[in-house]
Length: 337
Image (cartoon, rainbow, N blue to C red; front, side):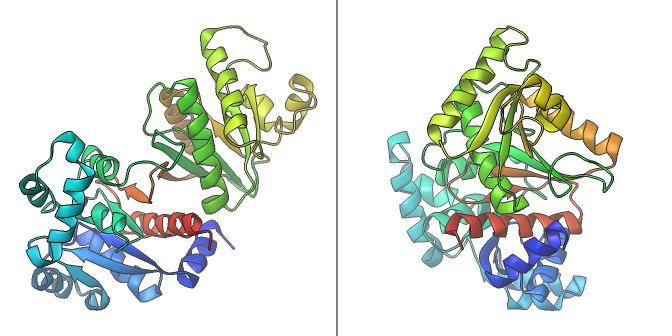
């Protein structure tokens, strides 16, 4: 069973309430039609019902009529969310009038529906810039307890002949969000990525905090940051199998790991790599993807109090379906189903 076959099956067994705020975007509608037909999620669109159904009819999408459609312009529906938003943002000086104006934005309304318990997760970004999606999620949902930073992981689907990783997978983070994390932020990224490794990849996380040094082979303040982050991550979750600092070959090649870090339970066996900066993570995942022909599933946003994922504005229908499946599995993992 492939990764997405397994994730699809789990989503079908535990359907989540998924919110799609970009209700007239054609690729999003086409993806939602497939998701509803397959029984992967209970879809809620934010938009005007007549317009959404007309667009679905135009595109030949018969299953869209089974979705829930709510309107941001229906004040009888949105007023409780405006009250909630004003309460959440009152320390920032937000008035109820400003809150009512803000809930007209489907991104904010979607996050508020999740916050109020009327949805489980959200996928957006086919039309909206990443900054807009993240701003709504940050301001409304915030981050998980003990986590102050949102990061982005990729699940690298490695070629069959590749001897590294586990079940032909390696998980990389952060590859999408935090340019130069502090030691504390790097530790939090490791904790959040461990959850992604478990909930989405279905693996027991074995985490390498990677650097250009292995166990003191080089000295530099950037090495010190990784060493400190490893220590902090251990303190945050003593049950995690995590080690650092390790060079990438020491992390994934058994012979090199045994030589450079003897006695390490991670060296040579890592399935999850935490990079010291965004430039390293982003470069690494793109190089592995292009040179080896690996698939790259992500970025999977992690650390938010509830699952919200951002689409590329160039996303295909298949990309959107896959993002919905991943996001539903994040929600399932949060509920420990």
